[in-house]
Image (cartoon, rainbow, N blue to C red; front, side, top):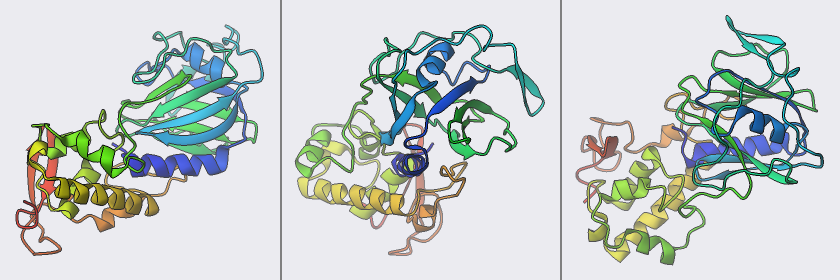
Length: 313
């Protein structure tokens, strides 16, 4: 799953290329899983909206929209009459059905599609990606949304495993502190009194939003803390070291475009390079880069964790 550095990289890339563009029309596929708001509502909010900003919030990509019109629900003439080929499958052009009741988990329900300020929220899930394409580019399998832009380009959402989610909102927010914005005095109390493993606490999005498996492992290695150690046993000095490690790891990963260890590519379709800097993640059995002790892998709460048994205590 794309974590904070990957989502930040994608959001920044999209912001550079899409800010100021206008969404002329929206096509949504027939699969219901990606739609957290109804198809009709997503199309009504997005169409004819200007993209004023693209930014990351936690693991979400937030498109801030400006609507200087009366939003509309797609008519029956737009929905279901024209056909578009998607690699062997035929789906209706326009928006198929009304889907589920609108709302965004962790944010505010979207109730007024004519509001002048709205947001399109994209969560990439495990295999989702957003691609800026020319209209004549072949439509990839598992394409679930196509936004036609006034610039003549298209923004496409592709997600083979369909864990990604698309929704609209106003005043969207998520729980937890931004790891790159929280200060040390607020970071340390997050882990006080918690009997859960420190790795699990770092992955708790209600505490820190955006930190995932890769960067938790890498941060704990740099801080010299074993992932299974209970959070409540870690001293203030060690937590300060962990705070610094989290900041440095995330900053370095963003600078290198994130980690491409599975399906991740940025908005340009390019892979990241931070996986070349991994010191423990994905290196089970390989020698520690510091002490040459073989890296070990354990499972904590169903998630793989990698650490050096000598360097981390």
